[in-house]
Image (cartoon, rainbow, N blue to C red; front, top):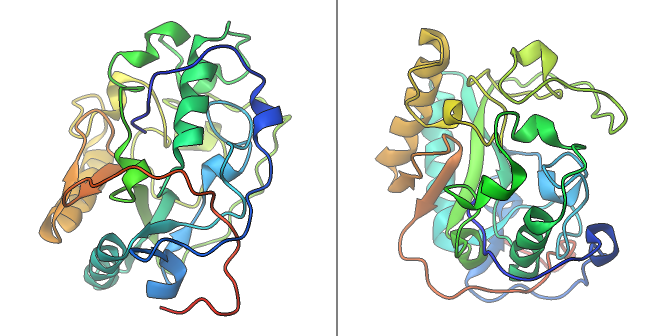
Length: 252
């Protein structure tokens, strides 16, 4: 995740109000309308994220992207299918109100509730490389994703009361996920998340390389500190429209 550092204290859960249903800007689409075979696990619409709460502007767990980005992802998905693999997205378009919420969360005192996402770092240092000045997600040009096997087995439900292991722990100790083990979980603020980290196993590194090469082939660029973060094309303007439910009139 790349986010905007701005704002002061707040209560995150109070800001995470349901998003209104409204038409998307003309250049945006729901990913499921372009390729419904791409799995979606939209973490910021849930409490399974480093803030511990749903983020403002996220209503239903729907991936919204710029149309050209979604179409490029569909090509990656088709390429990976030849290896019996597929994509799963964790975050797509991100309203700027959520970007500001990240920054306010990072400036609050640390109660340790979500320490598993940054096990070796002080919360205040997350602005150094992980929470930054602007977010390409807000332009609809960036996506956070991983690899899943096809067919994808079901995962145990996330339990917000459970004491899951650190994001760098072995996969069976982390919060449940259907993805292949990439060495860390999504949004793991740790040096081990560097795309070609030397601290991953050969198998984990091989999977990261598969993802990197598949995405690069279709024009995506990786942010080196986060193996899951990719951007596509020019950024364009940032948006703040909330993510609402797909209407019956929505079409590819």
